[in-house]
Image (cartoon, rainbow, N blue to C red):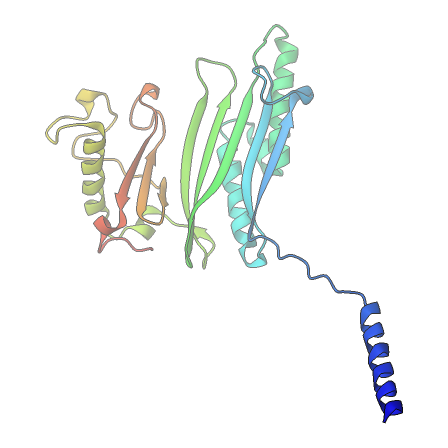
Length: 259
């Protein structure tokens, strides 16, 4: 009986010893669904935080799921569209790094012609995902630049992407009754700006024809609201700044085609 017990213990020790020697397989951590990437190029390796540094910076999300690679392409293309306001048209056909480098090159060429110029230029683009559901993704793209002049230029563009069709939705894809939507927008605008319902927009300095409130495709969506955005100069002087109108989804019952 003792010999059998010793044999069993010996076998167990051998098995345990073999198990100990087996290398442990490390399970790799799953990739995050979205990676925030940054392109940053400076002139002569200057510090972007210094007042006279010239730099170009692009911050954008990149999806790791291969099914969403087409959305990555849409984001990159919209950054290129945004960059059209700040770089040469031939520069936007390249990568985002190429766009940033082109901006720096333009500055350095300018400095050769005007060596006494002592101000830095900058070009910033930031892309954010402000909402995602099973069917759509909503983005905001904020851009700001300074290339001399009285003040920087800046603007925000909103986009709603249909995940199933990999396309950007237009106003009519989002709202079924644009006439009612326009009435609600005008009401919200007047309340936001403190304009009486009988007061003319032109009389208070806005570039809006009475009875014809502006609609545009600069439209985003959040968990609770639809956003319609007007950048500086679109409906008012630069001093007025940008205007974002927010309509709660419940106020759009019956005419909102997406969730």
